[in-house]
Image (cartoon, rainbow, N blue to C red; front, side, top):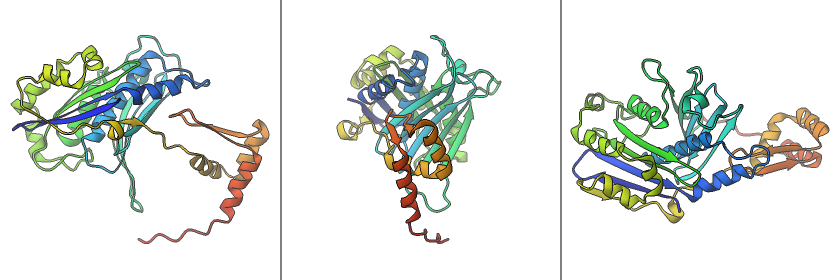
Length: 329
C-alpha cells in the first residue's frame, strides 16, 4: 500500500515528509499500458512522471490548503506536457502527452527542454473558489541562473521553493515501474506556516537562507540517500539509516484510507458539459463524420461515447435549464 510519513526534528527548525507510492503508482501505469491508443510510457517518461507524482504528494502534504495542487512540466521536447495532480485528501492522478519519439536513455532536458523552452508550473486550485477568484500559479524555468539545463526534477522544485517562499528545501526523488518515492526536508519558516502561495515570503526567512547549520547538516544527510535505497527500503529503515543521531518525532502515517491513492475525477457529466461547449453544429458535424463523439480520459483511460441521440439529449436538456442568477459582487 502507498504511504506518507511526516516528521519533525526535535528542537530544530526542520521538518520532513517521506512518501512511497506503490499501488497508486502501479495502477496509473497499468491503465496507461492498457490504453490501445497510447500504450505504455517509455521508461524515461515513466521515471519523470513518477518523480513528479511523488513530489506533488510531498508538497500537498506539506501545506494547509483545501484544493488541488497541480504540478506541470512542459516544453519543446517529445513530451509536450506532464501533469501530476494531488487533492488535499491525497487522492492523485498523473498523465503525460507525447508528441515524438523518446530515446531509451533520454534525460529531463531531452524530454521537455531541448532548446531551453521548458517550464515547471505549480498551481493551487481552491476547491470552493469565490466569484472572481483565480488559482495561484508559480512558474520557474528548467535551467539555472547561467542558462544551464537542469537535469533533475528535484533541483527544479528546490529552486521553486527557494524563490517562492525563501525556504531551504532538499528533495530526493526516484521512480521505476513499481514505486514512486520521495523525501522532502525543509527548514521551517521563521513564523507561521508556509503554504506555496507566497505568504511566508519575508525578510526573516530570506536572511536565513543557507545559514541554518541544523538544516544544512540534515539536508546533507538526506542528500546521501541513494535512488536504490529510496525505491527498495521501508520508511523505518530509511529514517534510521539517515538520521540515527537525530531526535525525530513522527506523526501518524497516512496509510490505508488516508494514504495517497489513485482517483480520477472524470465523469460522463463532465464530458457532457464539454460537448455542450462545442455547440450543436460542431457536435453534429463530428457525429456525421465519425458516427459518434468519443472522448478518452488521459488520466484513467476511461472512454466516453455519445451517439446522435445522446448529443441531442444534452442540448435539449440545456434548453430547459433556468437562467443563472446574476452573481452578487
